[in-house]
Amino acid sequence: MTGYQAALAAFLAAPEAAGWRELGVFRNGLVARACQAADAETAAGHVVAPRPERVFAALAATRFEAVRVVILGQDPYPTPGHANGLAFSYAGPPPLPRSLANIRRELGDDLGRPVAPDGDLTGWARQGVLLLNTALTVREGAAKAGSHLALGWGVVTDALLAAVSTGRPHVVFMLWGNPAQLKRPLIDESRHLVLASAHPSPLSARRGFFGSRPFSQANAWLQAKGEAAIDW
Image (cartoon, rainbow, N blue to C red; front, side, top):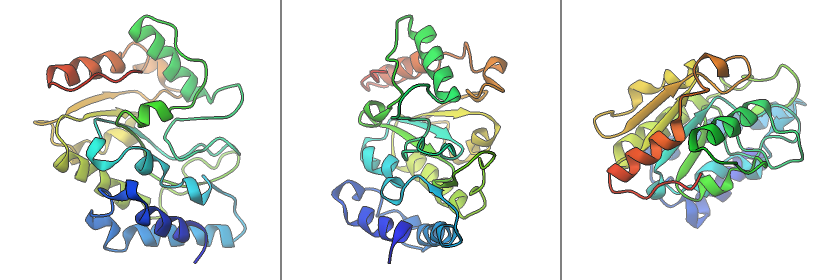
């Protein structure tokens, strides 16, 4: 067993998977089938991102019992070397991916202060911000965005979102763009806060993402529920 199937086995054996591996989606074969499909893509000669060892990075960095915010992306960056398993995060050299640059711009405007110029969002993940994509893999290359949306990941991430909604108290769900907002019925809004807006992509950021102030709204709501604010 190699590639993404091996990465799944390694993740499930790791201590940080304790809360996630108890979920039905890891027991009913759905995650395994998506990993098999990603391995088949590699076997067919496609370059798949992120690397297998990073495919479950979002779940490993934010344990189930620690989730306080969910930021939902579509799929990993298809640009070679950009994807690292955390939605919207980027740990490479400048320039930042354009969606991430817009997130940084809105963050600075929202909080009224300068923000870090780098794109590594690991610090958010460690505070309970689940940086989840609806598909956990993608083919690398120009015009390959969305190439794995039909690979089987959709039912997996739907199950993860539903489990967070059911099993965690007081979570802020940031749904940016129409594909993310289609997941809204999975969320119990009597218990959680949904912040829906346009996507931070350059194609749509000016249609409602800029000025949406999601970061300050999230912190105000968390603090009202007795939770600590996120250090954005």
